[in-house]
Length: 76
Image (cartoon, rainbow, N blue to C red; front, side, top):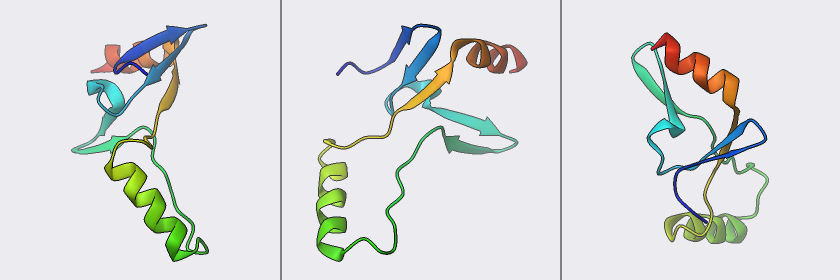
């Protein structure tokens, strides 16, 4: 898996290491994608997920329509 932005059929794939993975809303930066673990998830599974995240084996990615991304950049 490469780090950065890939263009495919007018959709961008943004990875966490990419500078555009986060967006600015007023004065706060938000990631475009995240992972949520349900409260119902057993603790042993949560531990495995946290370990995978810490080692970089499990990462969020975001898909953004190219046109939407371009308009966002033009507004900046």
